[in-house]
Amino acid sequence: MSYKPFYDLELFLEACEQGVKAVFVRQKAIETAKSGFGLETQTEILAFLASDGFEYPTFKNSRLLEKGNDADGETYTDAYSFFSGSDYGYLSFYKTRAGKKWIVKSFKINNEVSHLNNPALRDALMKQLVEKKK
Image (cartoon, rainbow, N blue to C red; front, top):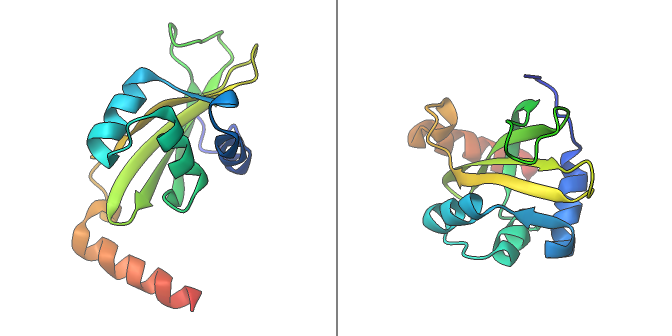
């Protein structure tokens, strides 16, 4: 496990703008995106990621992809927590070595206990961020 991203997040988000020709969303990620964020298709998920819906991403970790998931022993997956309004989410993705296509492995509500998903503290932090932008 690494504490630095393996991939450039901006390149991944630029690929999301290109849609399904550049990024594939795994079925499990589609299911959890639907239940957690109301996003029902790959196209909706990629548009969300490419737009302002994906707010304040925070890198969590980078790790070798588990066997059986397109793994070749050298493929890494990067994980981020993020906000979408007041929702706290989790995203992990990787890029295939052979096809050079991005894969969204996981997209779901983040249930991790953190100061970030404590509503009172989160609202105070968000208020500070908004004030700093002014």
